Amino acid sequence: MTPERLPTIGILGAGSLGSAVARALAQAGIKAVIANSRAPASLRALVADIGGSISAGTREQAANCELVIVAINWSKLPAALSNLSPWNRRIVVDANNSIEAPLFQPVDLKGRTSSEVFTELVPGARVVKAFNHLSPELIAGDPQAEGGRRVLFYSGDDPVARATVGGLIARIGFFGIDLGVLAVGARLAQFPGGVLPTHNLVRFA
Ligand SMILES: NC(=O)c1ccc[n+]([C@@H]2O[C@H](COP(=O)([O-])OP(=O)(O)OC[C@H]3O[C@@H](n4cnc5c(N)ncnc54)[C@H](OP(=O)(O)O)[C@@H]3O)[C@@H](O)[C@H]2O)c1
Image (cartoon, rainbow, N blue to C red; front, top):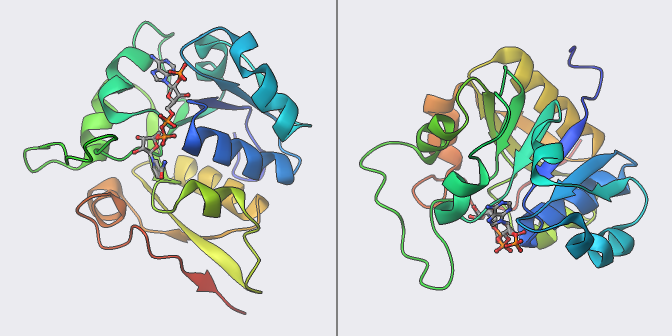
């Protein structure tokens, strides 16, 4: 897979963030399969509303894509990522934050980054941290509403996987900033704890 060719894309999680990512892809005409914990029929209304290039699938169908964006509640990640085919170096985007409704009590990560914990759930995958630092409304909205391009950060240990996600971010109209390896970038971008989340930055020129 080269950074120029878009991989097949699956989205695991069809809630606030997963559906926002699906909308962002659809607005750029990019195909993706989206899945939740239930049968694809439960997503009929959502995919009809998003329209076009997004289809509903099973958890397995989404996870078997070449690039899988994971947007699942932190406590439900182990179940959502279990009993799937071996990851075989497929790219997995960690869009998750280690905090969740209704209490919004940060999870004690014992000094690790949330991406380190996440990576253990997808052995053999090439993990890229992205799409986690803004609200779903900003992910689904016009990335060029202010005239420049809204910034998304991404980081990952595999340079090709990172470039692929960077290419996808550019294709959907955002300005991607490569934060380098997970040990650096994921720590900056994680919420809570990182300095970057919630900053809605726009790159001009
Ligand atoms: N919302 C935000 O503002 C925001 C911003 C940045 C990052 N994030 C991160 O994004 C992730 C998702 O948050 P969200 O707000 O989108 O949550 P959400 O609205 O509650 O949606 C969660 C999704 O995960 C699915 N899911 C749960 N267990 C599953 C399983 N075992 N298999 C497959 N799918 C499963 C749910 O499917 P069912 O409906 O079938 O249960 C639902 O589609 C979290 O890690 C969060 O921290 C959220």
